[in-house]
Length: 444
Image (cartoon, rainbow, N blue to C red):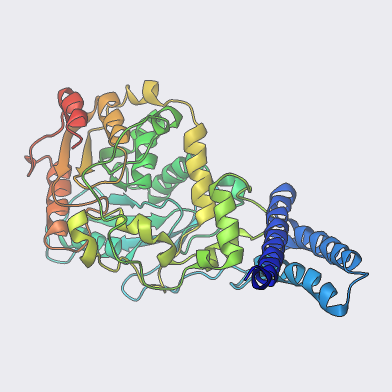
């Protein structure tokens, strides 16, 4: 019995050594990717490791039979194949922009900041009383296309007499790319000011959603920008500056994250090249502007399925099995690297509280019941901005409040239009500033 176990033990030991050798080479390759910044699309890391490992395996097997030499070369070959997959692009390396939408004209505006952005205009429906002030929409993302769900909501607002303008932030959707170093929260705020200058219609109302709400809030802290805004709707904002981003807190009621079915479609992050690149960038081990994948290739590769868990977190737990298709593959576009860089510049930015405390632009804060956003990000704005006139806590919806389910679009539109028209709010003004401690304690 013992004799029969000896060959099995030897095979297991050899397999263990081969696995360890393969794992070690892959780990060394990843370390060299980080050290070289992914230079040469990863080949600067792959070539020396592959050559050195092959030479070492041949030297170690020089006194063995061909089978022995092959056994030593096998883990090197496996590691070389695995790591070579990180160096081979499978998406186009030149930017492929989404096709134009069939229901709205895509305009391209060159802004004074140097950004060239895709602009969409939904004029008021004929025969509907026209609201005199244009409404500008700032989408979330930040560097992504405006989803079809959002386009439908903007059409709904236009159907109620609003002259609606929206633009995809530089680098997102059909807007031109920027050099990676120029993706900053300050640039996005500057682009808003330049867009309003180009629009040239005096004061406007602005609806900012998610990261768009962050851009809007920072604009309210800038007197020259705030003077252009008649009324501001801050919907589901993220952190507005570094101190806010570092606040420890809790989200709202449970979202569908972790319980919704997996998003349909291919994922770029399941491919070695993009899984490694996006993963290393996410953990801060690889610069956003790196030599492994270009910004254009990363944008082309990223799919809606890659955002599956983030999408699920934008819906209530009870909606987990009926999350709508937010976008189409033809319209979807997301720049992971540029978005991460913008988020990092928010984290690195100083407090804007002193400036925001001087804001005088009438504003409304919208908070979703099932939001995955940290509540303290939202209540920090409420506590700081004295011009917030009302807060609307939206029951039964997640972060993406106008999502086409049930009457959610109608309820969101009713809250927004009531504020813009200075009519009584459809919902209680909650939480107020004095409600903040109890609101947070109750983990609403």
